[in-house]
Amino acid sequence: MSELDLLIVVLVSLVGSLVKSVTGMGYPLIAVPALTLVVGIEAAVVVIAIPNAVLNAWLVYDAWPDRDETRDLPVLVATALAGGVIGALVLVRAPERPLLVFLAATVLFYVVQRFRQPELALAPTTTKRWAPLVGGVAGFCHGAVGVSGPVVAVWFHGYRLSKNAYVLSVAALFLMGGLAQLGVLLGAGSFSGDRWLATGLALIATLAVIPLGKRLRSRLSATTFERTIVWLLVGSGLSLLWRAFG
Image 1 (tube, rainbow, N blue to C red):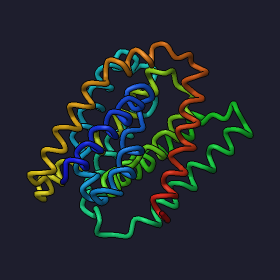
Image 2: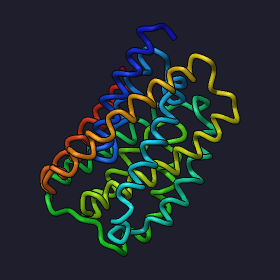
Image 3: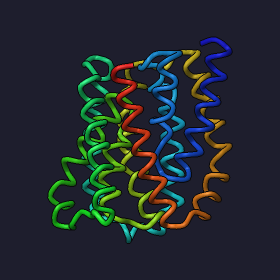
C-alpha cells in the first residue's frame, strides 16, 4: 500500500470508530466501502478486522452492566459465531451484489415502516422465534462481506432497548461474527506485510477516539440516539446500494 492508502486507512478509521463508539455500529459501514475504492474489497475487510474486533470487545465491556436489559442475546451470539465462520469461508468466492442489494432493501423497507409507524416494536414471542436465523444471517454477512450492521441494527432497533443495552447487543453480535471471520482470515494467511501495517495504524486510530465516543454517547438523549440510529440506517442502505452498483 502507498503512503496515501495508509493515510486514507487512518482517516476512515478515525471517522468510523467515532461513529461506532457512540452508536455501536458504523465502522465497517463507513470503512469497507471507502477502502474498497483504494485497496479492494478483500484487503478492506482484512485491514479493519482486528481494529473492529477490539472496538467491539471494548463496547461489550463498557456496556456490560446493562446486560439484564437485553433480549435473546445468548442465542443470537451463538448463531452469529457459526454464521461468521461460514461467511468468512466464502469471502470473495461468491458474488456479493445479490447479498448487498438484499441487505439494502431490508434496511430501507424497515426505515420506511419506522417513519410510517414510529412506535413499531418487535414482540418478545416474535424475536424469540426468529433470533437464531437473524444471528446466523448477521454472522454470515459479517464474515462474507465485512458488513452485518444493517441486519443487526434493524433487528435490535425493533427491540426498543435503552442506549447501553442496544450498544451491548449489537457489539456482542459484531464481536462474535468478527472473531469467527478473523480466525479464518488468519488461518488463510490473508494478512501480509503492508496489511499488518495498515491494521496497526487503523487500530491506533480506533483506540484514540474511544474516550471521545464514550463521552458523546453519554450526552445524547434517548430520542436523539434513536434518531441517529435511524439516519445511520438510511446511510447504510444507500451505501450498500452504491457498493453494489457503483
